[in-house]
Image 1 (tube, rainbow over the protein chains, first blue to last red):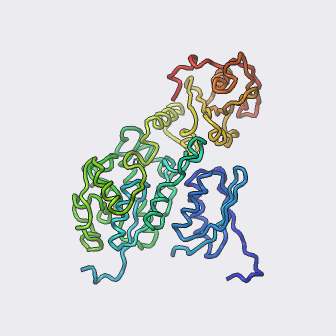
Image 2: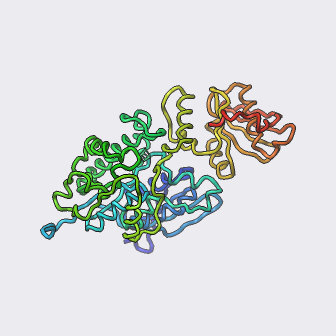
Image 3: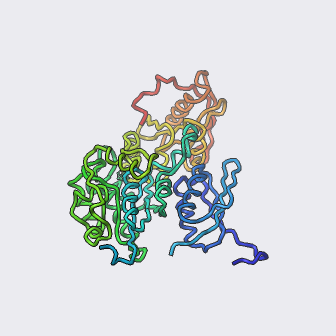
Length: 85
Length: 353
Ligand code: SF4
């Protein structure tokens, strides 16, 4: 567990210009390398990711903690849940 | 009988996003088997891509059917990118194509192989594979006579269970071992989809993806035509992922064998093509609102002028005597031209791919 003073590292994934389901696949593959509780920020431009990444997270036990959209840039922040054994 | 089994069996279900794979997974899950789904991304999948591109499609629900199916079933879904390896299937299908450039039989063999590889990779944590195939139903891989080929060639043999038509086939390992109850599987056959629809309602699914038809663009006639044109123009059967994505976008017009143009039809496509401006010679109309067009091939100067006139035809300056056009060539040269837009009748139908 992180102590409150420890600033949690936010991992990054650039999925701009990629079309669904590739951003989902990249998210999935990146999360495999992370640990439970880690934060991952995914940058996308395909509006389909607004639906697909949260759905993928719900199915696989991860949590979308924030979604931001500015012009065509979409930022989705995910908190990693249980990693499959 | 199953009481002696403490260990819960695990099955991996091929989830296409269609109704049949959803039912197959559900039927097995309801028998107490642990089911997880896999979905293969071939590059030609109907989901995803297109919905994000065209503005006019934006109002439509943008769900990815495979993800949606998994959520309905309450199972995990692993999406696997097989687009690189898949090229060989599309380019050289051992068992040939279906009605269009859809290599369904080879595709299924490949996917089952992949599923098996995946199960193996998961350190044999999974016991068998489930697919939603039904004997005697399209696509080609679902015909009775081709069923054994898939099981045999894929190496999955005995561990490939097709719950919707299992009763028409010899019992597989999961049935013989009692991991699943054969009596509670089905004997669907033929093209009549009524039994599937009935089963769907029985299982409580009221909303499901398109019942029949292709799970990929290769079953689409106009798409296959564009792919065949691409191969012919290049003189070889080869493609990159970007090529096959671009075949889904815009109007594709080929005035001669040297070049074709891809003209956006609306803002969404325009934005998408913008992303490729550095990789293609491209044409824009400066004097009027209009589309962006990418030029593929090796056009000469005359060809480029013709291309510009075609693009101008789709701009708001189409009724003007001349419009101003900018051509950004691949070699960095920028050309500004005053050209007369072609009239609709000046573009032969045969040019549209
Ligand atoms: S329709 Fe496409 S994805 Fe489906 S089996 Fe045929 S080739 Fe494969």
